[in-house]
Amino acid sequence: MTASTLTPPRTLTRRVSPAATLRHTATLAWRSLVQIKHNPMELIDLSLQPIMFVLLFTYVFGGQMSGDPAKYLQFALPGIIAQNAMFATMNTGFMLNTDLTKGVFDRLRSLPIGRMSPLAGRIVADTVKQAWSMAILLAVGMLIGFRLKTNVGDLFLAFLLLLVFSLAFSWIAVLIGVLVDEPDKVQIFGFTTIFPLSFTSSAFARVDTMPGWLQAWVKVNPVTNLADATRGLLNGGAVASPVIKSLVWAAALAVVFAPLAVRALRRRV
Amino acid sequence: MTYAIQAEGLVKRFGETVALNGVSLTARPGTVLGVLGPNGAGKTTAVRILATLLRPDGGRATVDGHDVVRDAHQVRQLIGLTGQYASVDEMLTGTENLVMIGRLLGLSRADAKARAAELLERFDLWDARDRATKTYSGGMRRRLDLSASLVGRPSVLFLDEPTTGLDPHARGGLWDTVRGLVDDGVTVLLTTQYLEEADQLADDIVVIDRGQVIANGTPDQLKTQVGGQVLQVRPADERDRETVAGLVSVVVGEGMQIEGDLVTAPVTDPAVLPTVVRRLDDAGVVVAELSLRKSSLDEVFLALTGHRAEAAEATPELVTEGIRA
Ligand SMILES: Nc1ncnc2c1ncn2[C@@H]1O[C@H](COP(=O)(O)OP(=O)(O)OP(=O)(O)O)[C@@H](O)[C@H]1O
Ligand SMILES: [Mg+2]
Image (tube, rainbow over all chains, first blue to last red; front, side, top):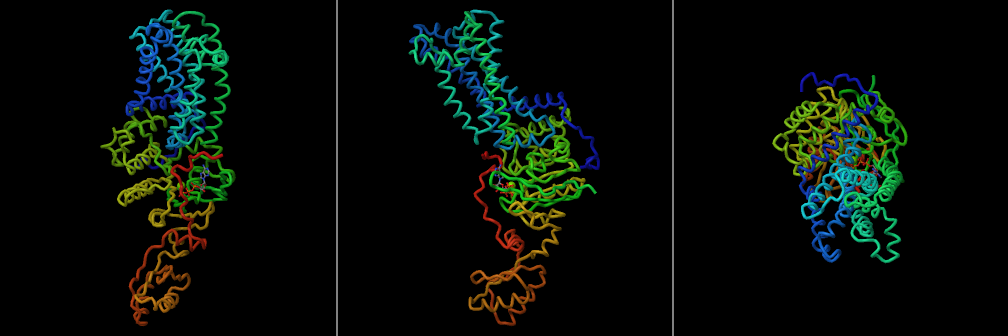
């Protein structure tokens, strides 16, 4: 080192400016997306698994469900997209927990950056990943016979709604990610809650075919609202009520879980 | 004079555990402060408070005059931290890890890349720069972790057990790095479990045990206080043990101990060795072993506290990240 590196007197800033916070968030979002390059497994998780779901549901169950795989695909794809969006939110908790247990979060917190930037960067990156897997699902669906019955504007609204809902839902993942002591436990939580939650909904089967006691639950299940709204926006039909209910659910989830998650994070670190 | 690091009466509790029970310490600018202590002493807790990661329950601390709680943002602009466990992003390459830090510190993309390259070169990571760090060896990760804490050219650097798990060669390399940084005017606080390391690097040493400072001073002061070395004598014939013990305690003074047929005593002046040899010879005692070795941390603790350093509790990795109610 040269003399120029002799700890120079520096001018210290008093706080992080909003512009700097945005920059830090962007850098940390970049970091989460670049990770994919070195961990192709994540891409497989993000793309292959949803594709498998579409093919399985269409060709294995489709004939039995609707007498014709193509007909069932048209019904089920919006549900599959909704379910996948919910599973994908667990990624946020998984990666957050990895950062916490590996000490990366501590390193970030020792830097003069916005306090919420590490979490915000994570969430921005995960939203990009969400959009990616929705697009993949739709593309594969269309390749094997799904037809958009509405228009591109409605499709855009459907994606927007799914992103808003999963953003709200991901606060649950953040909370779990902060509370558990190893990343795998986030996955376990995801499977044990999202599987039953998404199957006891209108995502894969018509509600009126289910026994009455189940219908009672299915009708209040938020996944039903989300699946119905997505289906309406892609296939046509009434959308106002399911869209509004989905948004109310999203707001409720965010209002309850965002403060809990942030508080848990503050307490843990 | 403003100290580069100053802590007064730091207290930190984790539930029932009192991790720090009134720790005070100071580091003069441009010097190395060694914080010495056994497992669970509270070293990491102290470092985490000083590095703004943890709020103290009592006491206060400043870095370059800035309060670590109230002016945490200013403190963060001055410090670098290398934690006890390497905290690099395993899914990024060496370069990407350092570029990310540089960008977060406000460097332009080009400057961040240049700084990353400079550090990768300096820490012998150039050939591995484009590999994901999950493929790095433990030593490489530690070096990258250290590089990461230097990206912002900190004026105060915290190193938490930086050489634990390094081979002797790498340990020597790290010592040289620390000396180089100090030559550049950086203040370093380093924790260690090795007396020798503190002795090699530190201008001042603080010894912590069970959350309390039990001794401080320069390495020399400390060594005089506790006896820098240990004399060991094992007679060839066990029946000579009492003779040996008597004669050692006459030469050395206090602190002689007998364990089985081995007689040990703390020694501050290495010149006692020839004297002991002469006396043994005069007494006609044949010895199987006669040696002078550096005191272990255990002996330092025995000397300072009268109890042995507590056996390393099975500390799970990353204990400080664990969740406790
Ligand atoms: N997050 C935490 N929750 C509960 N207890 C903790 C936490 N962090 C530290 N402790 C406890 O505080 C005490 C001091 O721990 P600390 O990690 O500071 O010791 P240390 O000197 O760094 O030890 P080591 O040499 O093993 O790293 C220990 O008893 C430890 O179990
Ligand atoms: Mg420690």
